[in-house]
Image 1 (cartoon, one colour):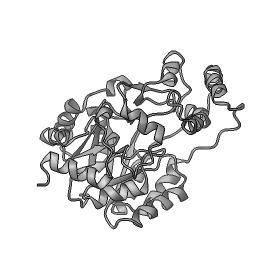
Image 2 (tube, one colour):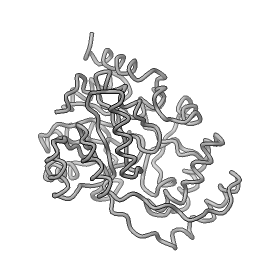
Image 3 (cartoon, one colour):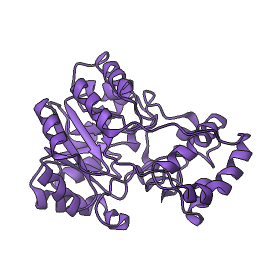
Image 4 (tube, helix red, strand yellow):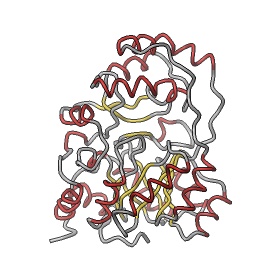
Length: 338
């Protein structure tokens, strides 16, 4: 389906860690690279796809968040103001200015169609039937994200070509879109065979996979391929900041938090996540806009206690290797190559 040698996919990691260089390196090594385009304007998506194609002739995926954002809530903004003001003061930031607008999913999808990647993947929901039909008409393979069997069935009914089964161990945003968020905290080992049995579609296992042994385990459970994100965060091609890389080297505890974006996501626990365990964040993406400047400045100052540090539960096993070497090591460990 994807025209790749190895069943190894580099996860989309919107917001900085994934880069055109990383995606191209993974593809050139025999896997498939991905770009998380959720925060990009249409023209930025097209530029990013062109940058990947400048370094590889192989297949890659573009990923979007399926979203229909609610209007900002002034009550929520007032609720989080004191917490954010305290942290902004520590960083030397003045009062926040007006927030920027968020790209619309419909416009982003049009850009994806113009780019015509081998694969379009998505999370947070299911595109409308006419949108799925448009992607298919362009000859693009379609992969949806599920955290439960119920979501997997909804994706199968929508006509996707494959399902990414996102286990509870995965870093970054949770893809849950049906039922309570807590219902989607199913481990990869339990989730993959359930979705394989329920849908009969190819399943891509994601969450906690950092080694070839993990790849073998996922494939033995019926997965057709695996998707790794945290494993690639310390590759030199990744856009991961130096403080984030340092935090990964000593990470001992991750947590699921809404502190940074308003939507549940797994990252390294710090003061910011603890603060919003006690104070309810604003909804997504309002919280994301409210924390944007704070997150940028915390990264600039190397303040890992306030930074957004997405990471999966496998973070202690991260390796600092060029992406091509990492893919080769994973393939050998998994018995996919001699």
